[in-house]
Image: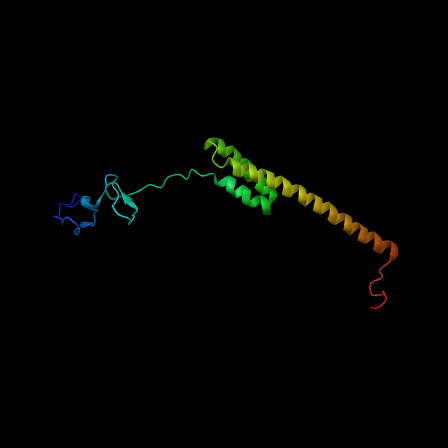
Length: 141
């Protein structure tokens, strides 16, 4: 057998040509990849494989994660993920909807906590204004 790249004679069990390093045809399966469990990044005539576009809906995942920590950004990313899910035949739609719901719930909770905090703060300020600062004047201090 001879190397298809440089023409050097090859032994039957070599994986690569000793002269040029080209992948030997005897070790290739019908898809152009080396046989066995040892994978490689080369296929079809020794040329590097092209990376495919990832068909996952990453915006839906980002929206779901951000929903817990930054609800506004989570809401925006989840909406984008929901729109992208239509392009990907529904892939990531559930994640995007979950991100939307969690973002809305976290946003409402943050508003409630903010109102509650200002209510407690205003009561504390009113108490100081009406009764004066009695700090340290309690019995036993």
